[in-house]
Image 1 (cartoon, chains in turn brown, orange):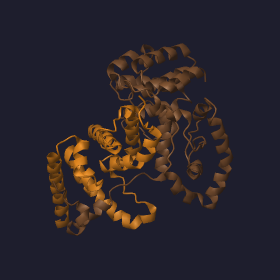
Image 2: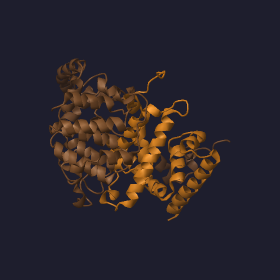
Image 3: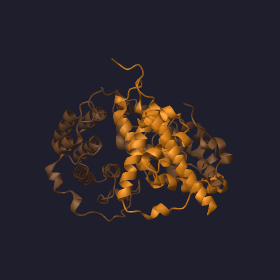
Image 4: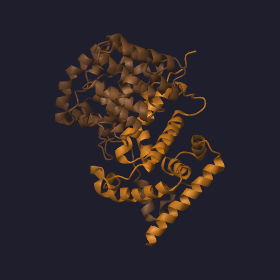
Length: 276
Length: 171
């Protein structure tokens, strides 16, 4: 069957506004949006992410004097970060120190550091060992039935603290980068993802709050698609609170339910590390 | 047996980041929700990558499929939510092409409103064929429908788009 000509191939026959509309369709993210996405996704997954294609675009930006100066200043940190990253376990510590390992985006780092209150981003030209978690696990059942997983993983003690009876207002802020919003109770309109992102964001500053948000997730999304991510956050929160036995019990359930999880290696890393 | 080429999430992310963002935006994900929905897509990719079978589909088709499902879930969620004030957010043009972009982006908003009124099947075919420039057999494969059905949806979607824009130009 011959394909019809696409609308944008005969634009003269189209209503003028329609041909304009086809040209005005949204494109990809800006560089800053990409960087923000990269940081946020990397933090959620606990892995270092880089965007190699950005390097070419950013080299132009880096040619400006100010960016070049900052980049030069960062170079020392970069080499330190890279050398540290080669030691087992240290790259993971880097992540917890608030740094995400970005690829060749030196200049972007400089730009972001001027605009963002987040801790300085470490830079490396290769993925940290933990970045390989994604695909190095043995192919196996990754998604156990979510409902049964949730039931098995529900923590009675936490259930009592679920803020389900005090829903936040409909218009609760959902800003992706504000620590302030992370500390808010979960709004009923929050998506599964944004609820867990809040938990992730508050993990270091207030692990108890993160744990409560995880419990809220269990209640609100019993068949959620991100049970594994929630459990990873909850286990880390328990470790940060010094509740090591509970963390290990929860980890053991996790291993049983998700034997081939992409998070398995990181889970073991967390448990080996123990206290924070 | 080890796969010949292990797919690395890092690589998949860097190669598809822009593409996922763009497709989601064209499928009706609001600008302010793009970071969240984009991340949802990559969390699914991260989890499911070990199950991806390159002999059955191209990687990009597989990622398209995930985008379609996430956008569809998003629209369903959003449909249940009360409309918020950011619906009326002004069109933001990229600074360097501010003036020529503005008219095109306003026109796109009109088209997006027409697409919002369509059912998901028509909208998805329209976006994949007319905006993403995919071949029709790839569109049908991604949507899991017969080729003939994909054609029928395309024609129906085009009819609705033309109707809307011709009415507007007459008005």
